[in-house]
Length: 281
Image 1 (cartoon, rainbow, N blue to C red):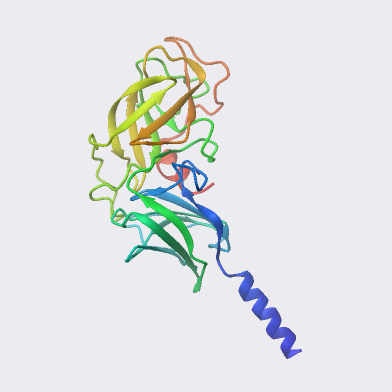
Image 2: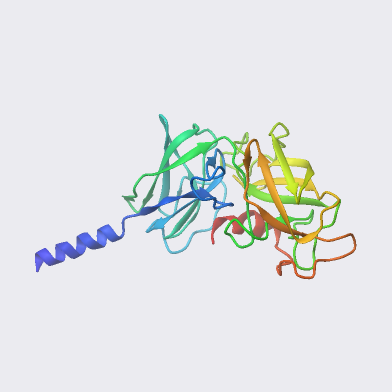
């Protein structure tokens, strides 16, 4: 009986051990599959870890200053000779979203999740300077992108964009940004020296801002919808250096018109876009 009880206890302990899925570390916005050119994780960006027994059933609310432990969950990153702690911003049994410190060296890296005193396997991934992903309504890296007008209203449904409209792409992966260390909302500093282009359809758009949004690790790219592009599912992508983001869509209609079959969600409050949209799925 004692032996059986010990075996049951050992099995229960093993079952509770955190486990990161093979190739389970991805850009939190694009979910780009490991091995694709845009699958590396940029310094200072949000990333997702998938697995089992990674955290508690529900994730607590966040407030600044952000911490390196969230409800008993911590994420340690080893890259080269450096060991740093990521900042978890959403925790659950099957998924963690975290922010990669901007000062971590680029190259081969490994992440380990600790939860309630138990450590996971070490999972490998690549750290790179810049690799942008666009958030999507479906939380899977494809389909309607989180692209808003100047009032924070999502383009979709009864709010199609038009040529010449100002628009904002929400995503993550522009790279490290000065002052964005999780201690307070980040400085919103334009990064005009980034080799960045926005493509809408086949047209290159004018970019007016590329830098941090109101939340740590989240980026926004402001652009002008170019002329000559219409369609309820116009493709949008961001090229940063030689790396292209995930492709998403946005509805663009001629001036004074609306797309009849665009995305059904027509409005998202800015707080949802900045926080809730990025913390869990």
